[in-house]
Length: 350
Ligand code: CP
Image (cartoon, rainbow, N blue to C red; front, side):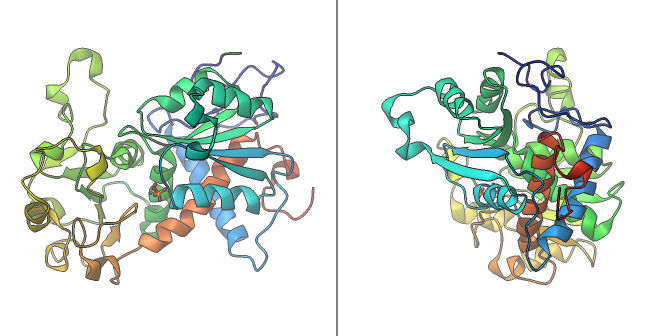
C-alpha cells in the first residue's frame, strides 16, 4: 500500500498506526521539519521534557513501546543518531534491531524499496533510515506503511538532530523568539543546517548562516530563487564574515566541514579555511557573555572548532547528545500512536 510522505493511512485502514491520538500530532513519518507546524514541534519538545525525567531515573525503563519494533537501517556511518535511537527504543521497552547495509543483502544488489518492504514484512513498525542520497527516506515512505524516520539524507535533512538542537537551546534559554542563532561552517553540505533553519525560524529565532561563499548553498537568498522555489528554505541572514556573524550571538553552532561530500576546488586549503572560519575563543568573545556553543558532531577539532572552546564552559555539546535520546524517545512514542500506558509514556505499568 502506498502512503503520501507524511499522511498516515486513514484510521481503520490496513496498516493504520495504532490509534494516532487527537491533538496536533499528525505525522506518520518524520522526514524533515519543513512540514512541522509550531504546535507539533512544541509537542515533541514538551514530551521530551518528560522523557528526560525517565532517562534520569536510576532504572531508566518504561514499557510504553512494548510490542513495538524499530529497525535502524543505516547506509552511512553514525555514532550518535544510531546509538540514541537504539537507546531511546530500549528505554521505552521496544524491540530494536540494527541492519548494517555493508553486511546485509544490500551488497547483493537489493534495492532500497525491497529492503524496506522486507523489514516491514517482519513487522517493523518504524524504520530509522540514514542514506547518502537526498530524498531516499521519501522514496521509502512511499513504499511502506511502517513509519520512516529520516536519520539524515545526503545534504538534505536531519530532522531529529534539529529537534534535539531546539530542545537543548530551549532548555537553556527558554523562549527562542528574537534570539540570535549563528550557524558557522559548511552550510552547503549540512543537512543539520537545513533542518535547523526550519525549526529555529518556526520558533521565532533570528537565524544567521555563515561560511565562505563556496560553502553557502545556492538559492539561500530568497531573491536568487525561481518563483517555484520561493519557499525552498526559510528566511535567514547570510554572512560571510565570521566576526560580524558572531557579534551579539546567543547561540553559536559550529558545523563540520564535510570533506566526504565536497567535490574538489571549494576551498583553497584546510589551513586557510580554519584561519578564516574556525570558531575560537577570540571570536566567541564577540557573542553575548552567556552564549551557548553547540556542535551536532562529529567534530573536526582544530578545523571548524578549536578544542579549547569545544571543551570550554559555554559548550553544551554533550548535553545535545543526552537530549538526543529524550527527543527520539518522544518521537518514537508519538509515531507509535501513543498506544501505551493510556497516554502516559512515563508510567511504570500499563
Ligand atoms: N550528529 C550526528 O548525526 O551524528 P552521527 O553521524 O554520529 O549520528
